[in-house]
Length: 180
Image 1 (cartoon, rainbow, N blue to C red):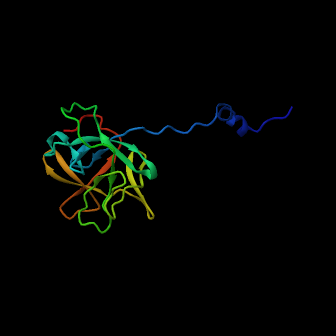
Image 2: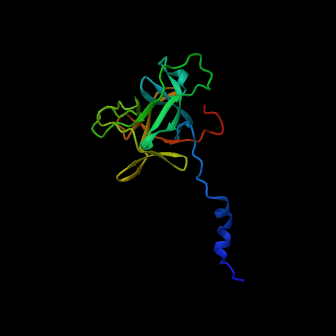
Image 3: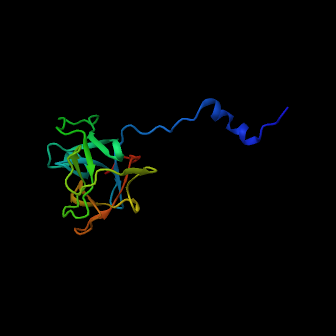
């Protein structure tokens, strides 16, 4: 009787049961963390990304965003309709975009799928663990910044500190306690 090497015996359950690809998250929200606040949700208002309480926005179409991963690592956003909003926003299936290098407006925004402005970047979004990152030829980037515009709302920027923006980390993990 021949003896099988130990590593082959260790692989037997995998071979017998088959290898399964890790499941991916179907839909996810993004939450901003920084020294000033922790776990504020990302929301849509007037075509731009904001952090905080969507009900405190001046936009009648503001809503917390749920994302799904699209082709070429795009993130497709729709309103989170599980929240207790009195109205349903008119937008859905919009793509998260970063401003291009030459853009004068460095706010993170949303565009109708396939209709991004010249230079806007709509692909290359991934997670490193639970942290949102953008992939470039130079590697991974996470250059999100927030500018407080009211007590409970901050505008989201990409690679811009010209107005006093502070760095934030966007994660798919909701805070364990509701943010203040």
